[in-house]
Image 1: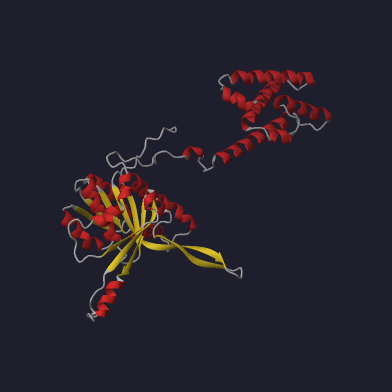
Image 2: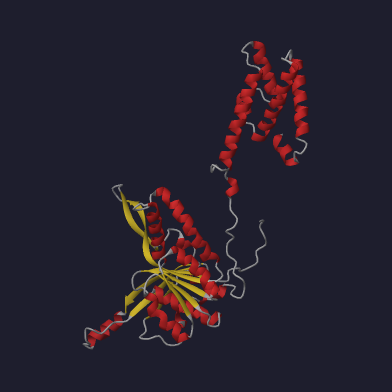
Length: 400
């Protein structure tokens, strides 16, 4: 498929990720966001929830209060997750929430290890595991529904050299704890933090309130990545509430609204074409184009060299001169190094000329003179040219 003129915004469904520590507000934030999308853009359409932990039970009041039907599946199975994406579409859900993708990733790795009867994957196993995981990332990007994914927080680690010149492994940036590259797939990636409301704690102490009084938690959403520039690096705080009340989703939804407004929500979602691939660039042994070309050239050179030896095996001065003349008239060069530097197509045609020349020698007998050699080369070239009548202009240009 050739390049086409861009058609404007073709992404019509949100792909959001949220990660953070325990109690940071991932599940609640994504539930509020999904409710807002359902209410504001899809006339209260159902929402699907793929839950690997019981957190879904504690956000159900959000959906019930807003009158949004909720479908759920409780599993950690990677296979079940793939099915959940398809089922959510069949049930006409506008959004799927996955909480937590960390468990699903671990289950896939564990399932692979169990099948291979190994305790943990070795380096060469990861290619197979990641190939299966790609089925999920393709669905995530291309599915025509909104998909919000929660994951646990992890960290990147990298080596730094200290003042003594010694390498030290240090904790780097935070990331979603799942397959290493999954965090790149989301259009909107949120890191969640939570802190107790210090001002309320102080008020409690001033009034000598009972120690059992619970302080408020404030949840901070840091926009780690947004394809909408105005959201990049933004921080939003959402304090806890005693109970969920109608419209309670709006503070979270309105904070992220620029991203949703950038989508072409009334159009058909266009993701990435995953049907096209580069398999034809490799042969059955997995050799790429460069390797294939080198193998082809090595075979041609060996064929040319052996044919020359069979035609003129002698080491006398006459045989050596004939070989040099034959090389020059067939390939236009006077040395073997020069022959090795010819392109494969030129080598192939030269090889064909040599084979026809060999046939003529077998028919007419040994070469008697330089003029006889030149005549037979000319005849061999004529035969090859007749066989190559279907050659294209591009091929002819490459041969020159």
